[in-house]
Amino acid sequence: MENNQLMYLVTGAAGFIGSYLSKAYLDMGIKVVGLDNLNSYYDVKLKEDRLASLKEHSNFSFIKGDLADKEFIMNLFAENQFDVVVNLAAQAGVRYSIENPDAYIESNVTGFFNVIEACRVYPVKHLIYASSSSVYGSNKKVPFEETDFVDTPVSLYAATKKANELMAHTYSHLYKIPATGLRFFTVYGPMGRPDMAYFGFTDKYFAGESIKIYNNGDFDNDLYRDFTYIDDIVEGIVRLTDQPPTGEVAHKVYNIGNNNPEKLMYFIHALEGALSKALGKEIEFKKEFEPIKPGDVPATYASTDALQQAVGFKPQTSIEKGLEKFAEWYVEYYKK
Image (cartoon, rainbow, N blue to C red):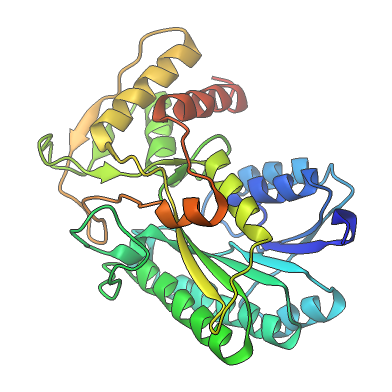
């Protein structure tokens, strides 16, 4: 089948990963229907700007709507014959799930159920959905492997993502829906999410405020994060798209991470360096140290062996290179 006859649904298309992925599919000549509810969890202008660049493609169409509205979702699937569905729409953020749990159940559980039900009624070649590295909870064994025990989430956000994996497995078992879950590890880059630490630190610097670092100032036992550059995430998803799982239960879960965790303090120094380069002057953040927050985990570290075996790809963008691209974009976008 020619690419121009393929039609993909990307939910969360105005989001960080969703907008980059939609562009990659469009560049391949695939028709993309982008769905998003444009909620105000963070700056809606950023979402609208991501969409604006997608709308320059004739093969892109945008629909504003909510995954939690089952009738709307069923009608959307009835009116279109989607070959592939990529469900990236979700209420994001670990800490926010402690303040506003209802949003997570509505979007991440009810919304996902509606999508997978629609895939049952209107079958697709492949359902790809966003899980999260947070499902590993406080696992001590590193690197995290897809076969690890993940029944001890430490946030509601993590619990909703684990629920998605269980629902997808069940639907694959019962209805033969080929489904792939992706456990993302701390995704960053230009046009990223303002609620992520690297973005927030940059905002604080320009506002003349100090940044809060949740490691108690304990540099020997610093937080580790597997920071993954957006282009690497998209490359992994694109390569997996036309490789739906097969077998008795056609459901697979993959880590997409950098397989190279960095100390949080090293990441912060690299961000200071990237901003210094973008601004043409030496900068340093004012820092405050606080205890680790509820729901946060000490380390995230992805084993990417399964992904590499499946599609011959391993994320490899260095922290320095990725943060330089972010800093250049930020200074240009916000006219700093």
